[in-house]
Length: 120
Image (tube, rainbow, N blue to C red; front, side, top):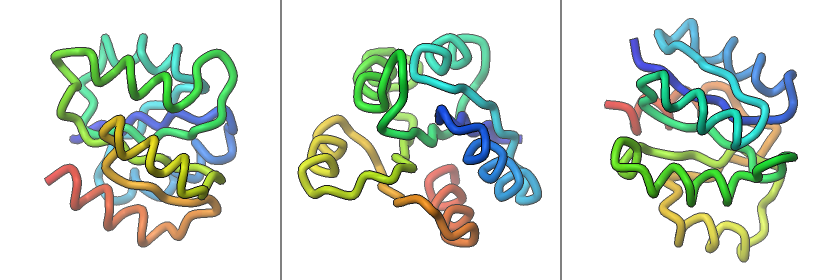
């Protein structure tokens, strides 16, 4: 079963992601900020990261920089799931190697489609 690490400071979003992806055969691991996500990624085998941009402790951009530095996850797909939609932030994400950008509130069938596509 492929593991998706959902990194978001909002518990409701993590729950929504879980309820959307688990019936589709994914296991969702949760983290409330980038720092916690780094720790979880050390003990789990993550197939894809779903990451919020704005979080306390370590934001999404900082998390992506750190995770891309690791040999284990440098090629693992990352999707930003965020309320941010500015072109400038999207460009920043692209430069860091983010594979997709989904604006909240998200459409569950679209999320499933993108996650399946990137984890095949």
